[in-house]
Length: 290
Image (cartoon, rainbow, N blue to C red; front, side, top):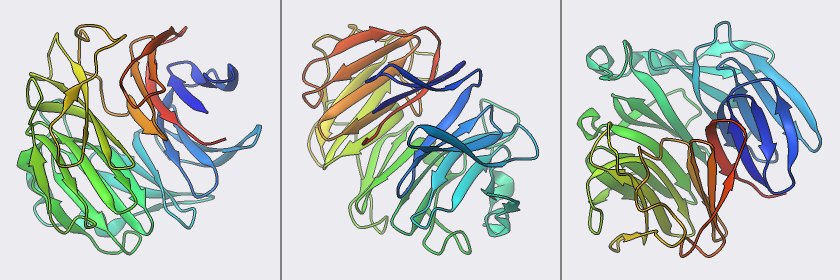
């Protein structure tokens, strides 16, 4: 499946099937068996075969990001860098509100820090606070460790099979030992400001530009530890803005970019691309099995 979330709904581009209509898709996240979506910044749904099941609902439309742990626990990131477990009831993750120095977190793009992105892998949960660094919990939110300082200005975190990757204002960061040690690179990029990242079988894909107001964004690929190579064949010479958080994904050699009302798809690991126009503005995009 190629899940495309828009301001008006969610559909599978591979089949053309509409999964949700009349709601804006805030975030998508894989679970152990089913995909989940956050709609209208408030309602969490689960995609069960051809049915859409409601998991739970926040008390306000302040949801920003979504992660599903390996036991099916659904975690929603909220404004002011808060976390909530959403099910039949909503439970605040109070331990996250006690982490050190959070009173110093500041968001240059808004009034409060954002819970901009989250990722889960096995029993690990990674939370990217904009701007408050990267935080890790290995015990389902009962305790937290800061693993990257706020100054890196992280915009997205992704995790896969023990590898963790981040897109940050200072470049691409990755760990291959579960976040214990980190490496950083901008080698091969035309500039260091990154907004989106994903990893697929040891290959990283990132979006890079010269800053938040860029008129020349680009997507690159690299095996972890190698120099980045620009993805070009079939893509615009420059995207007119940043390919943003949640708008880049890869799985089993397929790579997808969502930008404006266009889906750019590669079936050969980013070597060449084809473009599909969609009806509404894309809010998030993910590749999925099934």
